[in-house]
Image (tube, rainbow, N blue to C red):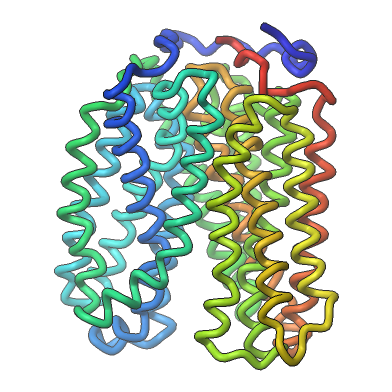
Length: 477
């Protein structure tokens, strides 16, 4: 079976000693055990991205740290995740995705115990860094393992379940943290991972076994990758408060990036998936994903300030008014998964991006003073539905336009595109808040986020008008 996109895509060079293709999915009930492990692991690592943020004031007080020092509890986790994504994907291709997933999960659980027992802030930050390394291993190979868990005809639905799980965990993080803190102290935010993690780790026996390629890992490339993303994240974070230091770090990131690309360019299976980026559908999906996540993060940062400062809502009302977004994602993702098996990827992603842009543009442009509840709820629900309809087919297109033996690299690229977009969205809002009062800055941020979502929709239309990855066999499969 073929499609215009598959025919138009340039052939990718075969990876040396590539892992053999496995059967089309797992039989039931083993498939359900594998999905329990995959989705359980995703819930744990996504929850821990946000669940500790609500406890930062309590952590700072308990460990006698300043608020600025306590922020490193969140920053260390994010840094470790983004530095680990691509190396973990490469390691998964070398030794087997299931081994890296289970090993990353075990590291995450052990680090949770260190965090729960932390007697000082440096101890806690070190534990969070180890947690991030475990999360960075789970995320990219988890997406790759979906490809070997479900048959191809159901892969869109599996990716939709993954998107739904991520949306639910992201939305539940702050609320779950607040609820737990109301009955227990902050160490329990990490200690609760131990019994849950043990159950998820036990379910890893059901994961599909895919033989590794046994390609050697390049330590020099891994070091350049770490320098690139660490300098980029820290540089964007410090650009507003310490411009000279931020600019120097961004320059270092550029140097590391150029060195990494030159080092990896001749290789058939590079750490940065340059081979996959030669495929037009994969390249379009990555660019669209960066634009979409930049707009999504910009809107997520802008919306609370708009509701609080622009519309005069209380903190509780602000939280309630933002709830329709993740709920709409959770409803849209399964439907998008079913449709992505039947309709062209370009149409679904363009429609989702346009709907996301419409919801954000309405939030920014329509006067909502007085009684904004109905208007904001409808507009944020539109944005959430658009985000859900965009993400599932776009991720599916990325995964299926990579050879099976490069599924880990595709998962790493997807995670890197997401975190790059989220960092750029935060930077955009930082610039706006620096230049304007909170209320106007938030409205301009929503407008800019709408433009970025519309750009994601337009980029998606650059795919072939055919069915794209919805029906195309994966390259090299």
